[in-house]
Length: 140
Image (tube, rainbow, N blue to C red):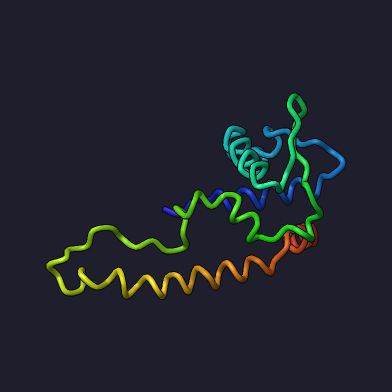
C-alpha cells in the first residue's frame, strides 16, 4: 500500500505557507488534514530533519526555512520517502524460480519501473510549493 505521507507533508507545508503570521499547532493542522496530531508531529519531524522547516522547543508549530518558491515537491518527497521503501512501483518478492516468467519478471520490470520513478521525480522537481499554494489559494 502506498503511503500518504507525501500528500500530508505537502498539505502541512501549504498550511504553513498560507498562515505565515500564525504559529499553527499540530492540533490545528491535524484538523485540516483530518488525522491525528501525532501523525502531523511525526511528519513535521521528517520535514525538520530534511531542513524544510524549523521548530522551537516549547513553541507551537513550525516555519518554513526558505521561501516556498525554493521548495520543490521533490524536496518534500525526499523528506518523507522512507529510505526508498515508498517507491512508486514495488516488485513482488520471491517469484517462483521454476517458472520461466517468475524467473525473469523482476529483471524485466526493474528497468521500466526505474524509468517511471525517475520521470515522476523529474516532474516533482519542477513543481514548487509556491505553485501548489497559489493553486490552493485560487480556490478559496
